[in-house]
Amino acid sequence: MTWLTRLTRPGRSLPTDDTFDRKLIAPMILGSILNPVNSSMIAVALIPIGIDLGAPPSETAWLVSALYLATAIGQPVVGRLVDIYGPRRLYLAGTALVGIAGILGALAASVGALVVARVLLGFGTCAGYPAAMYLIRSEATRTGRDSPNGVLTLLVIASQTIAVVGPSLGGLLIGLGGWRATFTVNVPLAVACLVLGALRLPRTRASARTTGLASTVDLAGIVLFATMLVSLLLFLTTPQLSHAYLLAITVAAAVGLGWWELRAATPFIDLRVLGGNLPLLATYARTLLTAVVAYAFLYGYTQWLEQGRGLSPTVAGLVLIPMFAIGVVVSAVTGRRTEVRGKLVVGAVAQVVACAGLLLLGPATGIWWLVGLALLLGIPQGLNNLANQNAMYHQADPTRTGSSAGLYRTFFYLGAISAAAANGAFLADRADTPGLHHLALFLGPCALLFLAVTLVDRSLRRIGGSKDAETPADHDPVPAGTCTSRSPGQSRRP
Image (cartoon, rainbow, N blue to C red):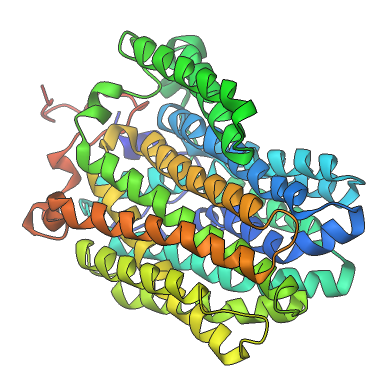
């Protein structure tokens, strides 16, 4: 049974030509933006939450870390389940959890309760991106086009656009209904996802799920992976010598994970394939560094605008709009080109200059200088995310698109966690100007390392060349978890 047959269900009309099924775009985009909208809105809500609940920045930073901790663990797990069982059920369950988390957050009376809501939000938003990448790969298989740059770019532009709207939307909601409104907004978003997902996402036939959960999902690998990440990320959020035992747990879990995955019949993370794919590992490393710089800048700069510069949350949100707006423009202009190396080099240089620009800020810095710095950082916002995503798509094993996309987001959120830890360390008591300058001295080497990893990775030159003109038939055309029976006369790949 081919992928096309697998997705067929009564009442669903499938496209008959070689174009992407446009009915999938709306649920794909809406599901994939649930995480960015919550990431960007919370940036302007941290100070109001801290004032209302009497919590310092070192405590409210957990609202950032909690979501990324949950997402970093959940993304590859849900991505693997999407590879096996298809996207529909995971997508619907995840978006329902987002709505529940929005209600809990709106009713929370303490930072601890808000942290729980953010954890649920993190797990709930895990399905959107792996499901989207799975559907893109599957549609590429059906249409015979293996470089769907337009759809991949659309995902990035959607996230960038939401990042534009997020801070200003957060500031508007805070002005209208207080910081609790930034949680309540998840309820209508979740309802929209549930309706679109139920109506448009393809069902997976029962014949594609004949094996049991225990025989297809590496539960032991998932537990070891989660243990490794939780201990590592907890240490990053509180990097103190007294918490060194967390690093010992991380190492032990990593060793156990490696030993188990090399022996598992259906490994959660196929280390043999991943270890032999150095270009993909380099992309994951660049993704981590991208998130460190972008999110430390987003949260640290935003808090400094409010406390160090004395702007209101609404004005601070408006100052950030140029950063995300230029990111959208850059992504739209360059998105049709598959080539990624040039984008990454330009983005890396812009990051280095922007980090240096933070050292020039002070309490009396003019508003136009603040806007100009935001514009400068918008260049890597538009280039790096787009180029890293396209590189991951071309480098990943087609049969593990969902889990590769999930692991890609895990590295991204690992970088975001590191950024939150840096903000907590350098802006522990107050987001003042000396703390911002110390943060800049941390981010500068990260930006330089990103540039170095890009320059030494020669494999990037091949993306966008003639080798990328191949169709999915040059890979394995049947995603993992599908039935592999073929119609009479169809050749079988050895």
